Length: 194
Image (cartoon, rainbow, N blue to C red; front, side, top):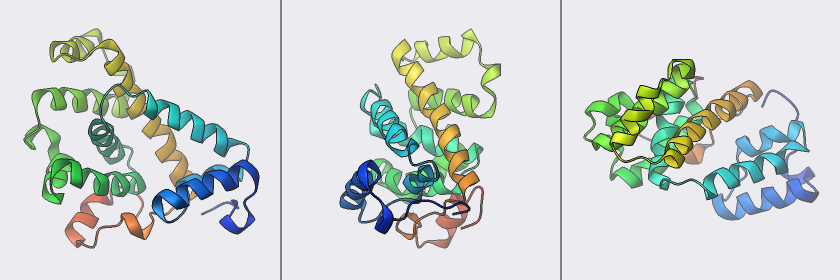
């Protein structure tokens, strides 16, 4: 971490509560959480905002992870790429399937609906100013509701913000998220080296 943050042994109040909850879930506190404690008032706000976005997300967890993987590739964010690829391996059935999506989701055997979703998410991350009504109509043609389209944009945009913030703060990828397979590791290291 580049800046001074609150370590677990020094956490109090809301920060300590958030750390304890994360430790209970994961067995450790993520650097992503610690980043926000360079401004301690922000961690509770960020946590609540993140929790609300995810709780109201109108698509599934698999879709959240797919969007995030593609966003992380283009940001580029090694941290988020490793975290979400590890989780996505279970959703897709194998690391090979994750590699195929990360290489080119258009040829990875995904459904037309998934491809449309990821094409839009990719455009949000690369250059949202180029999105047109035509992009929205293509999503509607494969049965995405306006709320779901909003959620795709929100997920991709949220990833742009947090991934860039994590890198700017110097957050490193936790060992628990780094796969032992060197090919997989290399493919997911899209930005800052591990």
